[in-house]
Length: 97
Length: 324
Image 1 (cartoon, helix red, strand yellow):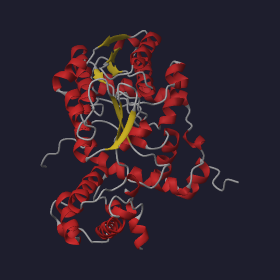
Image 2 (cartoon, chains in turn brown, purple; image 1 turned 90 degrees about the vertical axis):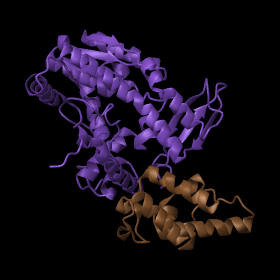
Image 3 (cartoon, each protein chain N blue to C red; image 1 turned 180 degrees about the vertical axis):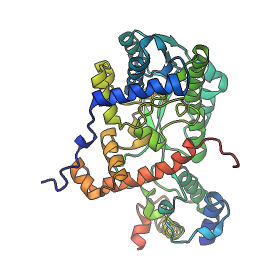
Image 4 (cartoon, rainbow over the protein chains, first blue to last red; image 1 turned 90 degrees about the horizontal axis):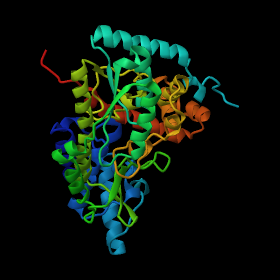
């Protein structure tokens, strides 16, 4: 999962220049992704991992680095499995810290 | 007690008389000598910024050397034209109305926009109204992700988060409006040998709240150095009609009424002004929050938003690049 997300970010926002991105790097602080980019990222995560990202989950704690996204997706998938689907996880990244 | 007594909303207070003299001298020098044009074309929307620019240009160049232009289209509020005519009446200036609806229809503006809306609201069609909105900075530390608000013909409204395709499609289509307006302004500029006045204030100019080669295009921008609250101070001094001074800032781009903070700034302009000033003058979030009646967290988020929008604005400000 980490490699898939990392590849998406590098291909779409760094034009293939892999050396510029650490897995902990903040997208906001480095200016890698703007608000349109977040829309693209969310669409990618939803279609790739079969999840639904709720409005209240659109926060940097969940989406601001490759590592945070991995933690968020894992928590979403786990919550969905336990709840039988459709659960909204307000702040998965924060819960996992 | 305020530990930072110098930091208050009053820090943006200017001497309107001195500032008016400075700007009008600059407009005369710029239009007549630098650009060598005989007057100025001003697209007036009935809002505070374009009205102030019209008053400044009339004072600088003479009311017989300005051409005021109204460019309503199918989604425009009727108030815009009505208020614009009050400006013309006050200035006794030449004006023209150019309805750009047919141009926009020919370019597919409405059709393309509606097709993009239907990507997320399939039932959207004739009789519906819409606007796109951002979450306010006051709400939470969420990303600034756009949603669309639609109103059905029977008055039901709903809000849906946009996909990237829908968002980009709506923005690309509605940007025809600002570009068609600018095309019409340059028609009059060519016809009369005038220069085109741009009407952004500092917030809009700095933060990229304009369409590249649309309202961002102009030969001179006489209030782009002024905070929005300073534009209001000039309006009061210049005698801009009260109704225009009292009108809440609006984009007048979508069929549902849309405030500028819904669409772009996420904070009322008075607070955005203070945050922009604070960021550019190295004032800590804590100090500005205390003086401006905001929380430190809110100011921090505003500082981040300013920086983020500046990155986007860099492309909007860039001229065509060439190899040197």
